[in-house]
Image 1: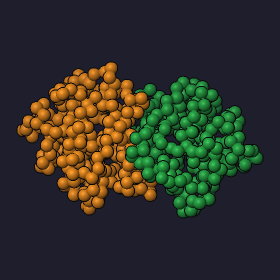
Image 2: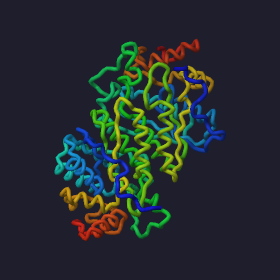
Image 3: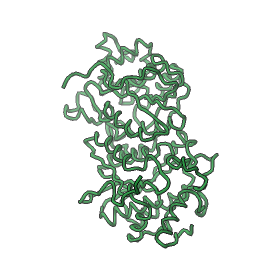
Image 4: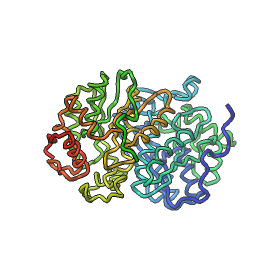
Amino acid sequence: MSRPSESPIHPEPAEAPASAVVLLSGGLDSTTLLFYVIRRLGVRRVHALSFDYGQKHAREIGAARFQAETAGVEAHPVIDLGLFRELAATGSVLTDPARCVPAFSAVPEDQRRQPPTYVPNRNLILLSLAAAYAEAHGIRDLYYGAQTQDEYGYWDCTGEFVDRVNAVLALNRGASIRVHAPFAGWRKVRELRLGLELGIDYGRTWSCYRGGDRPCGECPACVERSGAFRELGQTDPLGI
Amino acid sequence: MSRPSESPIHPEPAEAPASAVVLLSGGLDSTTLLFYVIRRLGVRRVHALSFDYGQKHAREIGAARFQAETAGVEAHPVIDLGLFRELAATGSVLTDPARCVPAFSAVPEDQRRQPPTYVPNRNLILLSLAAAYAEAHGIRDLYYGAQTQDEYGYWDCTGEFVDRVNAVLALNRGASIRVHAPFAGWRKVRELRLGLELGIDYGRTWSCYRGGDRPCGECPACVERSGAFRELGQTDPLGI
């Protein structure tokens, strides 16, 4: 397979929308997206939306609050998705208290397209909820920080996934909601370069899956993130 | 446009699955579906799934509990979707405390394809959550009681909607979840005939949107339901 192209799968509309919803986890991808939407696209009314779905690394929500305030959003609801624990918590090492997040190097290569850190259907759930929020608030553009990660992949982070979700939402003609995933075809290092240009303080984002006080440095999220900083000849301000 | 065909848009597989998730609201459609899956298709392990999303007619959840027990399901989680109130409650008369559910006759004809009783993106949210539940429990078949109602319609109750949701879920190759909506192309009277054959006690279902102690007889759900009974020359056991 060829290397992912450096051009986005979902080019942005020439004219930026007046308002948008941005899914914000507080990690590198979604924080970069938030600043991209506000500072590069120039969208003026932005609602960031975060979810507490029982992830061990709920510390990312604190990062989301900081970044939403810094970016100057109009609203930042943090939605308690505790029901996820009842529904599907045991489906993922990110939410199952009885299982550990493995080191990236311990994940066999054949599991890297659907690794144990995958949370059952999480992204379709979050997009569905965000689309309901957008519809109820009369907003049509929904930004999603999906990135087909360099070495690690999830079915619900691809451009094709976004296209098919849009095919569902297109049936809702009254609302005209469209999901944009401008980073879907990018490598993480390209996102990072953009974010540094936009002045993002990555020391106030959170990526580590393990929920400790400091990044572990070996879970898949840490490995990918530190790799991107290294590729730019920089050190991650979180000291990974 | 021609009258909806009497054959289902989504024919059932020749062989019934060993296990299934059924979305159960406690109303006429989903109760008929539950008994159809268990008594007609012969699925042995059924998990019914209900949601409390702040609907005024939460009384339907009590009906769902009765029907799930009567049908003999293996499990019946009732999931608190209180977050819906924060997200989008004001988007619908079914959930907004400040607005009344109008009589069917008061809904202008041009609003009947997206009426005020529509709840923003509710069905995609419920299907996404049910798919996560199914995936976490190793179940592949998910039954959804969508019916393109005779006079009233929602974009998220059509066969096309189900087909597009399946196109999204098909990307999740590890889980192979498929949504079935066997009644999508049916008229309500056909469902009712089936349900009566299957011995369903419709006196223990709930359809009225208004949340009173007795059905109001004039909201869209009451009007449709009583019309179906009348068409069969019967009286609704709820006395509508």
